[in-house]
Image 1 (cartoon, rainbow, N blue to C red):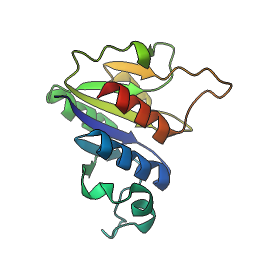
Image 2: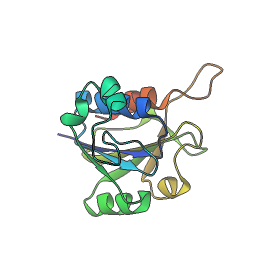
Image 3: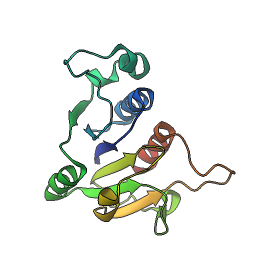
Image 4: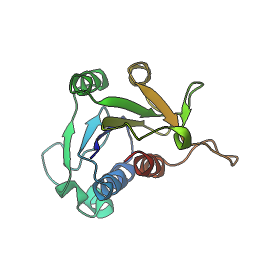
Length: 156
């Protein structure tokens, strides 16, 4: 059985983050790690965020989640636990997600970034593999919650 940890790096939208929580919980992600500006299900006072719960439909209650100190420390810790680090991003050396072999994939972490700046250079430089969803239309990318759902479905 595959163990998947999802890392959300510097997401900006509560709605996208909450939607990702719902999708991740439904697909069996083990844990979500929030890094940087990514909104959490609880506000800074530890109260449940109504705007988050409205979109997530309470999935944050059923999936383990935590706030990571930094992307580099999160990656380092997961690598020490023998997780393969997979980043979802469009780069000149990305692997087409359709062609990525998942048969030998067991413990892995998927990193996704925000829709403006994408994933950080630190995350890219410390990834074992970078995958991308091939686009055929005029738009170059999908919404981060949609992209995350597609990638998780293909990888798990």
